[in-house]
Length: 224
Ligand SMILES: Nc1nc2c(ncn2[C@@H]2O[C@H](COP(=O)(O)OP(=O)(O)O)[C@@H](O)[C@H]2O)c(=O)[nH]1
Ligand SMILES: [Mg+2]
Image (cartoon, helix red, strand yellow):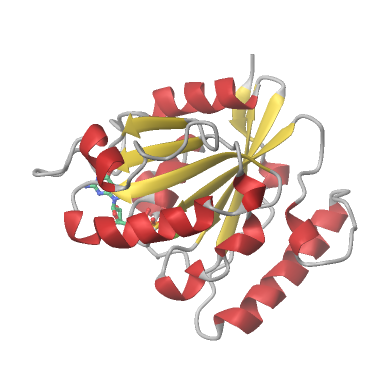
């Protein structure tokens, strides 16, 4: 079974600075252009842009506060050097990963406060919702709680499995995955609305990440 990044599927990596609203629109136009080059669907409209492109493609939405480690996690999954992640993601990024017959398209949306208002534009057609938390920064757990519960209440995410990634377990004083899950109120979320899975990870160190294999296996299972 083959697995790896499908380079033709790395549609765009956008670093959007000032003027997020305008540039996000430009980002979408660029995405549409690149997508149409690859036979993406051509529906009109903002929300429909996130439709996945083939029956074997599954969309994995990757959200979380800024600095939680989303880009570093995805660099590990796509076998890139995690230390190459040097800039916070201000816009959004799509990385595709072929695993057996299934193509996973990971959508990382910037987690800075100014970007969170746009998160709901990206939820359409999500197969798995990954929420990344910096387990070593308990001072931001309540902010993460609010961000998570606001977006997970979106009807289009109903019944979509949530994978809570309790990242930065290597940092001394980091809370355990169970503690993070509790702090984010995921043990109270209705299992009927969202099956919840929790994984501890540490992903920053080149060569010895932990939790990535487990995450890949879980995503593959949830997307099959
Ligand atoms: N110690 C440690 N640092 C991490 C880990 N994951 C990410 N980082 C660091 O946290 C910072 C933010 O990571 P980044 O992937 O850009 O976060 P994002 O804003 O959520 O995309 C970077 O300096 C990373 O090197 C981890 O598991 N352990
Ligand atoms: Mg990022």
